[in-house]
Length: 232
Image: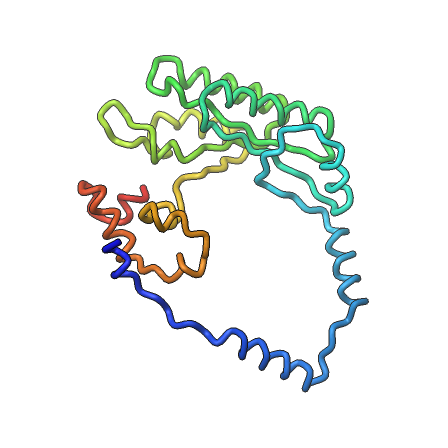
């Protein structure tokens, strides 16, 4: 608990008096809520075609489509290569089937399996699967944070997205006119000491100083020389 002594807290703002003051000002100048305007705005919002560009909808459920119809949404299902080849394969299959059955409601981005990355033939295998997924309607490719934060090259370095190994993959995506979606790191919260990671309050997290967080983590990662190295 020694590190808690180094935590800096911002002064608390007088939230309640401020809200009361704003309400008094609003009533003084004659502002009153207008339900007809609110209803009109909601109708307008519902009329706009909207896309949720990061969903993980894997099941064929009528109530999902009812919701999408009601509020005029379309889901873009995102595949993530985070749990091995079997999971990656199932993630590629389910969104593809949803697109084939319900193109009004669903689109999808594929991903590529990272197992065997440094073995001969891995790149060609990835290119073949991506081409097949593009033929089945995938509009993009998702690269996950295991590239950059988990997977190490034979020399011990963490492989990055700009490594020459991936160049043929990025070139294929470019030629096909698709989109690359990347989860390349984690927010500051993920680098905090374990006790603080369990705190759900954004207010508490927001009061931490960067120096405290990075100093604590540098003790756990003595070879890192900066916060940037910790994150990358």
